[in-house]
Length: 239
Image 1 (spheres, rainbow, N blue to C red):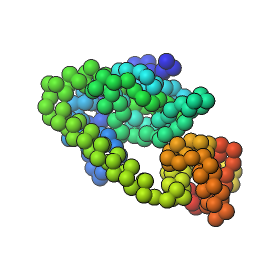
Image 2: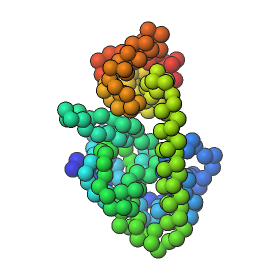
Image 3: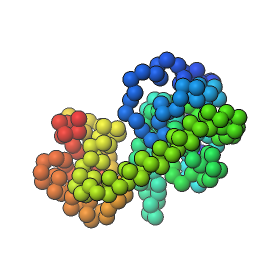
C-alpha cells in the first residue's frame, strides 16, 4: 500500500487537552467530541500521529481494518470503484470524525477506500488496542456504543430526509457542500468542483441522465456552469 508515516510517530497528547473543550462545532457522525472527556483521554493515550501525502490510501476496500483513525488536519475522500475501474467519490471526511470503528470492532473487512486529499495529519489507534481498551474500560465501551447508536440513527434520518428532497435540491446542495470542502478558484473567483456527472448521480442516488437534465436546468437559471468533469459555481453561490 502507498502509505506515508511520519519519521517519528508520537503518542498523542493533544486530543484530550483543554483546546478540545469549549463551544461545540457542528456535530458530525462519529464525532470525537461526542465522547466524554475521560474516554477521549483514554483513547488519546493509545493513539499515534501519522502524516499522509496527497493520494495516499489510508484504508483500502477489502482490507481488514488495522487501526481506527481521526483526521486532525486536512481531509480525505471516501471512494469506490465502478465497473469501468474509475474512482467514484461518495463523500469527504473532515477533522474530528472517527473512521473505521465498526469494522475495527467487528473484524469485518472495509468496504470503501479512504484517500488523502492533500497533506493529511491523523491520529491512529490500533484495532487490537481499541478492543482491549473497551474490554477493560466499561466507560469507554459504553461511550463508543452510544456513538455508534447515534450514527445508525442519524444515517437513517439522513436517508429519509434526503429521499424526500427533489432531485434539483439534492444535486445543488451536494455541489454547494463540495465547493466548501474540495474545490479550487479559477481566475474569475469562481469555485470549481472536479466531479463527473456519474459521481454526482452516485452521491444523490439517481441516474446520470436525470442528473444531466437537472444540471442543465440549474445552468439555465444561472446557478452553475457545467464543464467536462467540472462544475463551476459563482463565488456568491458557493460561499
